[in-house]
Image 1: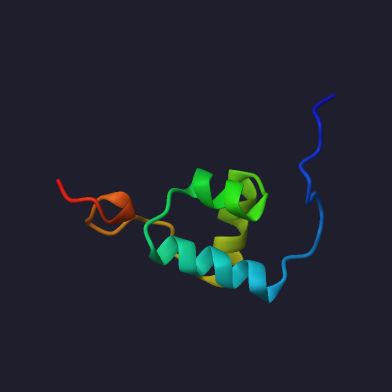
Image 2: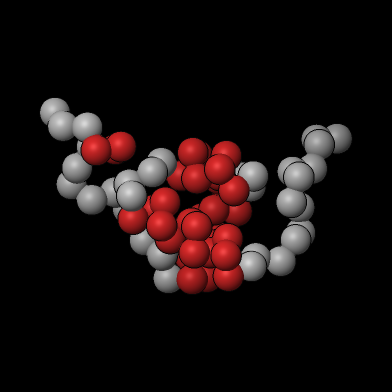
Length: 67
């Protein structure tokens, strides 16, 4: 059986939702957001969906890099 994530079934606090929103607005990839909040990428999608946060990247490259 697979190991459960560290924050399995813990409630989503407003601070976590705010952190997801800030990272998403900064064009951070979903997987990196999950690593920063110690949750799975699927949990990040669920948090974003419940809080109306868009994870779609804007038309720019991540981390402020220019092409």
